[in-house]
Image 1 (cartoon, one colour):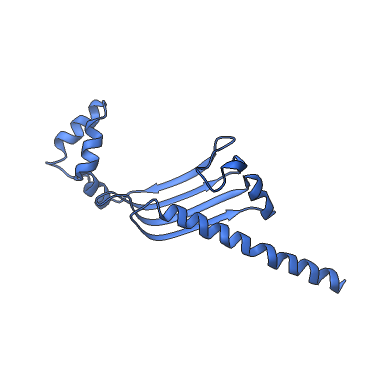
Image 2 (tube, one colour):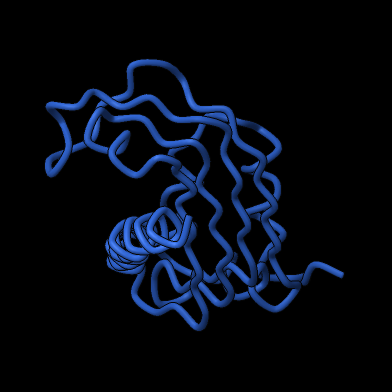
Length: 149
């Protein structure tokens, strides 16, 4: 009985660092997409760990605060939680390809200050002008005279 306990403990000790490595790699990949990140936590739940090599992930949770996209565009908070993900195994280590669409819950928080700063940004203003939505055109006309409350 003691031998079985020692064997199972040893196997768990060997497998658990794989999860930490996957979390760290995913965190670094997400962090590289932003200019600045105040806080970022990524958790990739996958049991057993070898399923990752087959392109299967049970769940991914991302919690981020203070994401700086560009100089004047900032996200106060972003929380994402996905259902199971099925990737093309040959795409691992490259641009990932999905075998099926991802289902996820997303919580995005934009502060009043961040929205006002983004609306004053020349980069965002130029992108909004290219859209053919009349309501946005009106917003761009009045943006210099008002702030969002």
